[in-house]
Image (cartoon, rainbow over the protein chains, first blue to last red):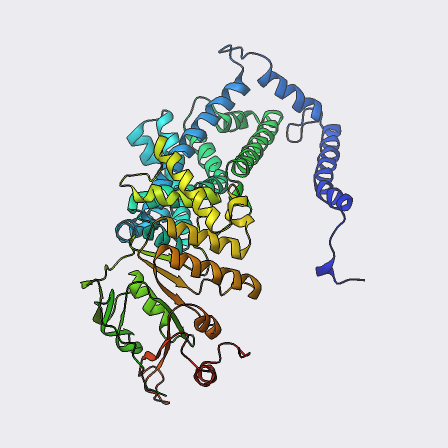
Length: 273
Length: 271
């Protein structure tokens, strides 16, 4: 018998072990749901899968009686637009700030202290300020996401830029490169895959800020819907919405990872030379 | 031990080192360095680790400034930042991992032109490609033009770094333990390559190595860096200088043995 630390699962066991928790949770839910519905057929807390299916069908496949829109898809489109815009702004700003402060010591001295302080401000605490300044429309939600994750991305990119071996910068100079050429041809291409990694890591926070902003003030969106139907304890809508958000987050992550592999083949193989 | 043999230099030297000191806080690394080098010389710098040979190379490179004294290049103070007149090959991280072999060498042409991005377009790009291919042929990398550096062996990476540096036509080539991480067989190939390129491109070469054998085999001049004075109570009190300045090819086994005993960079002895 090998020590536990040296035991690795074979492929089939690995898959089984991975799927097992999902199955257990599913069974646990089904048993619980059935037990509660048996006592009270009108129980709303743990709806059966049929009820969840009906709830989802109502939201996704039937037009809303009030507005005539397919709410599920409209919520998805609104939320993804807000998230996409916010993350795009954060990634652009973060890249710019991170690259400048990572590459140029004068910019580090100028912006690093500010960046450190700003990153300590809890973004949700300034949500009211955003609503006051930018109104209750789309802008304040996008700005919240952008403000929430820009410091993280900027600081990550700053560190990644500083991690690029100084030898490369010296080498480029001995080949005649000036500052902007070094930043654009040596640093930027090596930082881009790290930026995608940073975006992947910050998406969790991005979703958090999106749903929080939608919960407080919105007229549509995945977060808005969940908080709206909470008033009727409509778990048959909340549960599929949560599952849907999880699926979206999963596929965005996979998409970014594959993009990184495709676009930067030298990066995934970890070349530093 | 401290007998300093000087090579007589009738012409105006390319590099003139005048009373250079380098210290970090109380730690004196180099002291009273006075030496000159003619254009076209191949100087090998050996010494124990921490003896200041790399510090001196970095002063020539422009990344380290002397605490006292001055280094003159053609009579002018040497620029205090790296520039295209001095090429460099480090032991590692000398090439750009996100560019293919060909792109790495073509980048030299892009960096030479004034501009914001350093990217080449049109005829300039075609021209650079032709030159880069010729240079890569010369260092024996024609078969790997489209590979990325992480797909190359250590020796191939250093060939690439050398090709990259040489396309910039530097007057001085600085080599900082370029073959330290390579296998002995490959190292011999690299020696031949460097000697050929040195003759062909009429370079002035400075090479730091911890392999004394390399210093005896390559180049025209060998410098041994070591402390001129010792204080056992305060080892950092005194800095190192050049304790031997020998013309290569005129040394006997006894001198080699004497230096080797002192430095012990490699255990075995060559004939």
